[in-house]
Image 1 (spheres, rainbow, N blue to C red):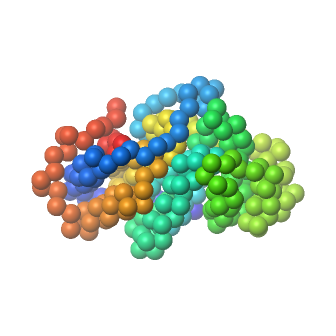
Image 2 (image 1 turned 45 degrees about the vertical axis):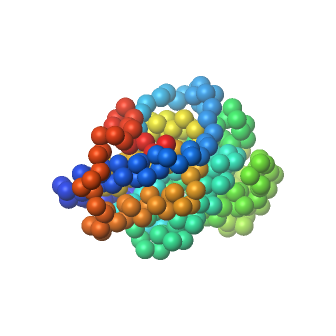
Image 3 (image 1 turned 120 degrees about the vertical axis):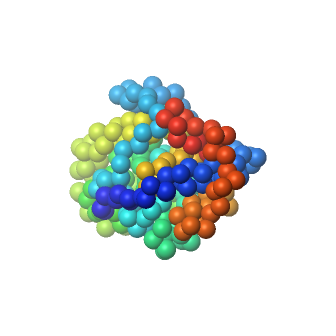
Length: 262
């Protein structure tokens, strides 16, 4: 994985803001899709709250697609969240259509909600162990296997995790040593704090990063809605998006002024 920074011309921030405004208007009258949330104290005792400030993309991230893509979709997720399972399938559809163009990349970050899903922090640790031992491809294979192994109303069968790790190419002994040694526990805690800094209170929670602009998408939206968001962003980056009639002042924002697409 390579860190990604995407320079932008002075005109791009205004266009992106207007584009986010149009996207917010477009979905304002649609039904809000659900996400799961838990009290912050139950998420982690070490985490504190902040608002809309995700850490930059780095070599520590697991990225599907072009790491230098102009549109980065940074998802904070919980492996046992039912809405995250639905959104995982949606994001794969998005990547099948837009990832191949190199314009969109998907960044997966850990945000286990321990009060709702007691096993989720350990599943996150297991996934990061697989990533540490096998790299980006192994992480994504392991992650896909977890979501594919359960129905939307079920929890992950954690006894299958060592098998999923082996199928991703990780020797069982190395996987067990990493998990039992809690080698990635601090990384999961740090990822939770990062999610809180980004404004996440539930899952899935996705931050769209386009140049130096950001917008937030809460919950598991449908493929059609996410596709509309992505296509509008691509159109404005390509110079084919009409922003003249958009009033960016009506878009809801968080404390940092980041558009929130609820």
